[in-house]
Image 1 (cartoon, rainbow, N blue to C red):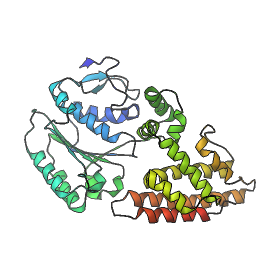
Image 2: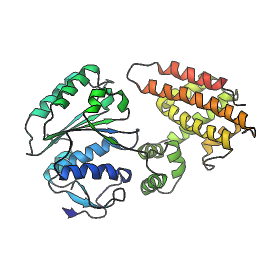
Image 3: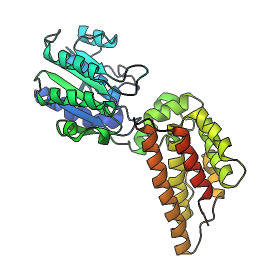
Image 4: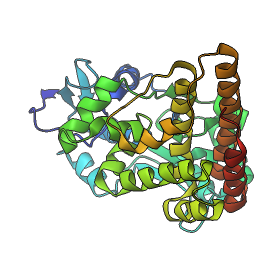
Length: 355
């Protein structure tokens, strides 16, 4: 392998600095011809799992891998060269030995016909004479028939085909599929790693506030930085404070939810509750430079009486459980009614006792 020039790796290309251990694990297995038939890449949204799978597929097919020593503090990590004939085909998204499966446009699920096509792909010969790679994006969106068809493929592994299932919600996959995959878990990076990566792309700015808003998920943070999502977050957090103090109605808050999306505002609400709970118990204010959170600290005065503080924190924790249930319902593929879910959450919030 040759040494990559220092500017050859784009900051937006996987493996990202927080993915070094996972990349090294797969790289060692591939170098030893021990790469498993199937892997489940799991972890929260915004950690770059899909980009990781795409990049590793390119590496598997690359004819001239190169060394890259700046991945997650690891040394001698190999990545695709980006210039060989296989890499060039990958770059156009047309390599015949890589198959990506995801819900078709207009559908919430991965259907059985897509998995039948996958089964045909698995048994045919490689065009480049090497391995073949299947990537299933949003694997938890497999419908029942598709999941059963995939299980049959996983039960009859092909030594030269590797399947990567990517999922933010691995618990929704049937247990028999999970049991036939090696799990590769991705974690939220340490703050210094996330800050350094984001600063390299957007400059100094208000990086800490952006990462706070993204719940320390770097790719979500980048989306926030590039759009008006930070302003939308601030408006939503102010609106739920105004709802609690009677300055806004549930319908007024719902109009903001409709503009920004239920999943996004529930993420902001969840982070908000975590900080409010901590504040109720300790009186400690986090992220004083984050103006979006300032109204939150006027909602309650931390009690010096331990029992009262614990009672408020308990109420917040119970409501947090309801909020997380709502997030799971909205993210599910069971056709939930987002407006009814949000109305219920906002009503519960308006009635919550913080004294």
